[in-house]
Image (tube, rainbow, N blue to C red; front, side, top):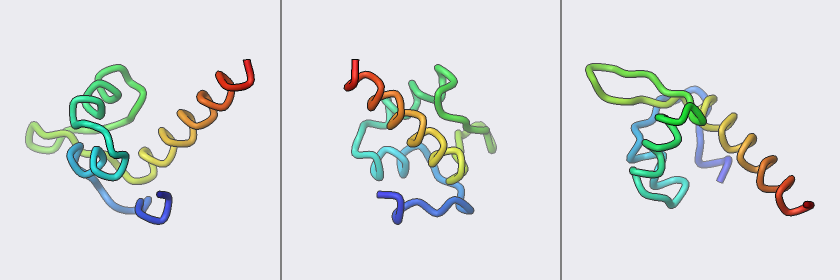
Length: 69
């Protein structure tokens, strides 16, 4: 999956949802909860590839910690 994400690119929530194979609502929730950094351009959310990678790394670590409990 990491090869599908370019850290220098800017993504729309719908593109992030496709890559992660989740709904756009799930991506919007992550943004709203402050888990996934994003910014607005003309009223629409955008996500930097580097921020998406950080989110994935933190979620992976969190999941691994829950598995070991």
